[in-house]
Amino acid sequence: MKKYLFSVVILSMGMGALPVFAQQGGPAGVIINHYAANNFVAGAIPGADLDRIVQAGIRAPSARNRQPWRFTVVQNLALAKKIVPQTLDGNALIVISAEGDGKTNGAEILDCALAAESVYLAAQALGYGSRIYTGPIDGVNRSLKSDLGLPGGHNAVVLIRVGKISAGTDAVSAASRRKPAGDIVTYK
Image 1 (tube, rainbow, N blue to C red):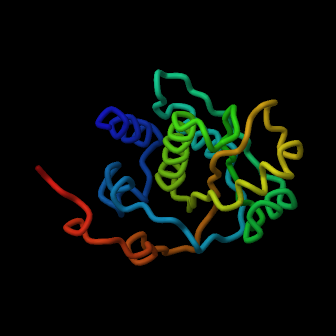
Image 2: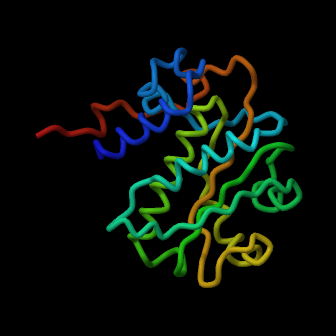
């Protein structure tokens, strides 16, 4: 876990001096203050930023370094709306897939989840909103795999929506309520 957090921080630091870091307490602030955005707005994400976000997923840890994932970046608005109807022009959906049925191989699911978290955090480190979705996955696997060009034998596991967010969004007030640590953490 420490290696993972260190990687996210180093990757984030390599992304340049970002105003969002200063507002949220440096690179570790993105990890601690992240939130699932609901306030997306239209507007294209520059290709270089999208590439950096995907690179964060590629660099995620995986069991035995198998890196079972494949990333499909959906920028076509009509296709994206078939998956997440609320998608706005300029938002991107990053679909992470792996070999198998997407339900029975726990290691691949965990690996894809780690990649999703890396994508999610990298997007926020660059000042974009991000949100992880699993609800649309069954529909994607049932009817959109060929439209997405998923590799043979692969099924979607998770997807992340990335996009611009309303100006002045405050990560603390925009976040959903969290359970208090005292209710869910035990130290022995």
